[in-house]
Amino acid sequence: MPQVKPYIKGSVFFYKFYKDYIEKLKNLYISKIYYNRGVTYYEKGQYDQAISNYTKAIEINPRFTKAYNDRGLAYYMKGQYEQAISDFNKAIEINPMFAEAYNNRGIAYQEKGEYDQAISDYTKAIEINPRYDTAYNNRGSAYYKKGQYDQAISDYTKAIEINPGCDTAYNNRGLAYHMKGQYDQAISDYTKAIEINPRYAGAYYNRGFAYCMKIQCDQSISESDYIKVVENYIKAMEICDQVISDYTRAIEINPRFAEAYFFRGSIYRIKGQLDRAKEDFKRACDLGIIQACEELKKLK
Image (cartoon, rainbow, N blue to C red; front, side):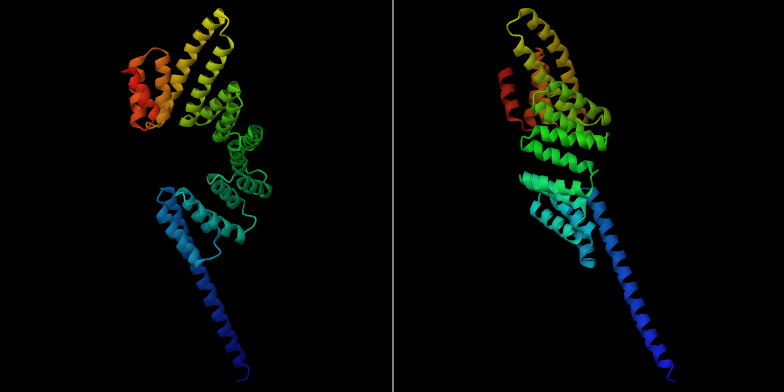
């Protein structure tokens, strides 16, 4: 008999340990189900439902870093940046080496116009993961917002070195070159972005605008020289066709791209195709471009 009691105590202890372990596994499994459902809702753009499911996952597993991070993304998509930052903070608190959470917090700070704080977070993400091309791209965008175009170009270039298929990095670097007046480099980058992603409406739009700026620069240089003025006019008409092609492609991809209608209408007016210009100005006006409404009145 004396030998039986320790065995019984051991059996009770093992049973309790096993029961607790199974309960914990069950909770983790249920938490993961809620998390996965949140991801599905997020991908469908149903952010409130996503937040509800992420929250349930967190209630069951309070140290679920991915759930905090992804709930933060859902809040970000709703424009609730403070709530997003709070969730990213919690994810970082649980896992200080969570590079993605630093990057995402940086995006939220950037939307709030806190560019230095954003740059700090992107830099931390890069320190944790030196091949984090998205963080380089995002830091470049923060530098761009601050008007620090050379630093922006450097970061976009690094993002491209890490991921040569990053269409947004090419487009963004094009924007930085554009702001520096380096239109040929800008056009080259927009073109590369389009080669990678033929449905990148923004890149078509940006390339069209860069062509327009290039025309203006060329014309201003040659005003005193009649021959060059004629040459530039011919060149301008050729480029106008390319611009119209780019804006048309942008509109095909996004039929509600108001700015593309407006600028295509402006090019049609330059070419003397006033009926087409009116059509585009009207469409842009209907989509909320006030300047297009004013231009339409001038053509009536």
